[in-house]
Length: 54
Figure 1 (cartoon, rainbow, N blue to C red):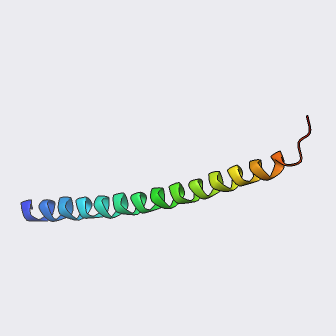
Figure 2: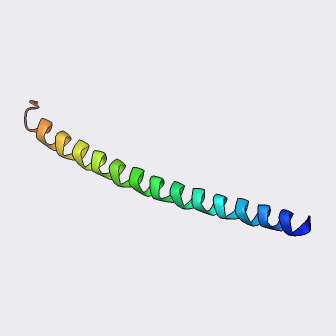
């Protein structure tokens, strides 16, 4: 019984670690895309500013 419980806890911890690692990779991908969008917004702002008149 104790061995079964220990194995179940170990398996659950492994699954949590895998999920955490997956979430980290997803967060990093989101940050990369967020930076890309921010860069594009900056470039668009610069381009649009050329058409503004006083």
